[in-house]
Length: 303
Image 1 (cartoon, one colour):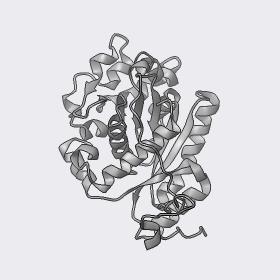
Image 2 (cartoon, one colour; image 1 turned 180 degrees about the vertical axis):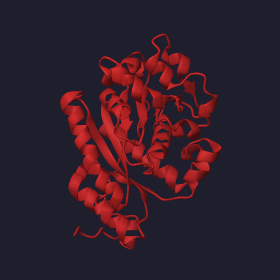
Image 3 (cartoon, one colour; image 1 turned 90 degrees about the horizontal axis):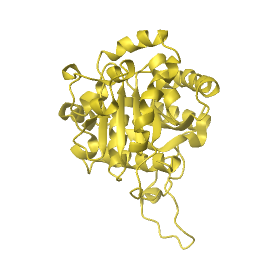
């Protein structure tokens, strides 16, 4: 059985004036919380760190994390591109774009050589955050790409011209381990794994890490796991704490210190089509994603 998560005490939560230096509070992962600096705006743009947001299990907060992490990074002055790589178009909807109204999407960019990225990329209401939208047409690419030469490198090919134009590119992958996801992993430098703090999500993590290892070995040796992110965490339940404990025991420092807690705010942001950082900028959820942005940028300093 995993060891129980360290419980926060009043002493942990109170300000500490220790003559021997600051004493770090224990976070929800049972480890001391790091003091991460506020990211400074970059002196130049690019080349971008390309990060795939991936988990083959649906409903783990992957799209929510992609949108809000992208917005939080954009707040630091970095130029961010969010790629909706899921035929459901959830990331597009979450940023106020209706997929069925699109004339051009990421599907056209993948399958039509005469389409350029600037014809498809759209600005969002968030400063420094652009969107490469998707709709149901993208599901056809999974079949059509099978017949292509070097099919796993198709996304990488279309991204090459725009990598110098951005600091961070986030790819919201479909909840599967199919050819679209393999394309995303092949085009990426890093991968963030949002993981719902419940048992079935934990079981699927082994399958995902096996896929990542195969991509590293056969297609993209530069791919690294940036971190595993606990989402939908409810510290009041023993089950959620035990799942998070098991993940920390198995992956140690690969697990982000930041944990995204359950909140009713996230469904509301989908309705209004904007990230939590602008919809409820002073909320606990917005603070958590800003903390996550600090961790991601600390682990990907080139970003």
